Length: 498
Ligand SMILES: Nc1ncnc2c1ncn2[C@@H]1O[C@H](COP(=O)(O)OP(=O)(O)OP(=O)(O)O)[C@@H](O)[C@H]1O
Ligand SMILES: [Mg+2]
Image 1 (cartoon, rainbow, N blue to C red):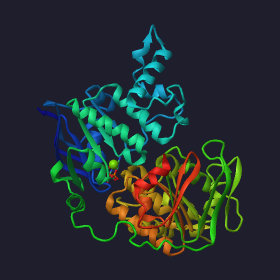
Image 2 (cartoon, protein in one colour):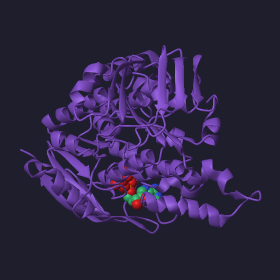
Image 3 (tube, rainbow, N blue to C red):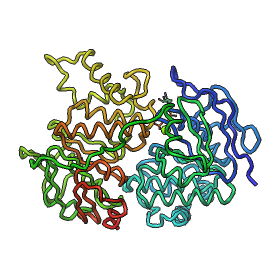
Image 4 (cartoon, rainbow, N blue to C red):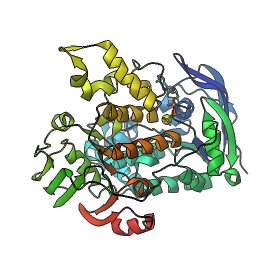
């Protein structure tokens, strides 16, 4: 029999002028995997952060298994059985994996004031193993792990306490199938044990497949909760945006043509790790999709193409022969890059929206050696409108934005810089379906204007939907290449990935 795990009543939360939650009533019952969906900035992370003790609320009440519940912080919530996997990076840099898992719990391994590191390492190894991530070395420094594995470490930390309620905030979008499967299995396990999961995602297919019910938020208001039978894409979308969504999602043509002119070439790249002898040519007016499993080397291709990493052998060159050896050189030549690791690599998180957007364009808007506020503001406002960045003012710090809105700022930076070449690594990560649609249309329009795009993505549907040409990578090499066609299916591409 299902019973009530958490109940939130009339939750109100404001951030300055922003009404993040306007009186939300929300109940999670045992055995549920409750999806939570809504546009960027609709309040999903906020309600979950309140439940998991990260923020207090301005008014309203919480009940845990019928008892009043007022967590003072995240650790307190965890003690009471509520754990959350955060949307942003939730591990701590420059310490080991096992320290990340047991942070704040060292006492478990302490005797006479000495921490038994070996026992801690062993326990960390076991929990990673249980999770299906036994390949992660508990003794490794967290900084040597990629995004996905760091997320798995975060999950291991959350699961060690055997929580009754697990909140997964948009974690899956940035993960490969393996990481996603680990999370799905975990959700199923929790559900079958009579525990509960709140699962935030922008991916309708994923929600319909894995969630037992779905709550829709819009502008800080809970619009409706659908049970499994009621979940239907067009209904969900219209509940989310408050109107019928029209127009194409991806591009609708199968033309797939582009100029023969090569704008960026990577030759015989050896990076000492994933890539052994990698070659790539990007053409003017081409959208080149790159797909593969997360370790296949595709993310490295993006980093090398923007000069963040240098190959040990081989070259990355622009059409005029320029060596892309540093990001500033790339930027100067109108190459833009969106990193998969947004908060660490793409954004100056404490700076304002305006400062983030103008960064690569400072030279362009400088007049007589001076920077005029009017020009700065015009540049930022243009992007704010184009991408409907949800904020009060462009002078707001980026860190106060919701996840998807931060992503729009990164996008806006390179659109504002009039990039000729865009290297996009999981660009629509965390972006709601409405904005995703406009980003796709924007990418397509850029192509038609003769710009070139490398679209690296874990989402095969996105690559198939948008690319003129697709390359699939496996173990650092190209395992398949496909021209745009109606015939390409995800299934077919997967064969070349594994
Ligand atoms: N720390 C903060 N300071 C100021 N405003 C904030 C803060 N956190 C969230 N907000 C604002 O509250 C609103 C709700 O944000 P929230 O992060 O809950 O959205 P979300 O539904 O999780 O969106 P996304 O899908 O983009 O992650 C947004 O307008 C956001 O800008
Ligand atoms: Mg969020």
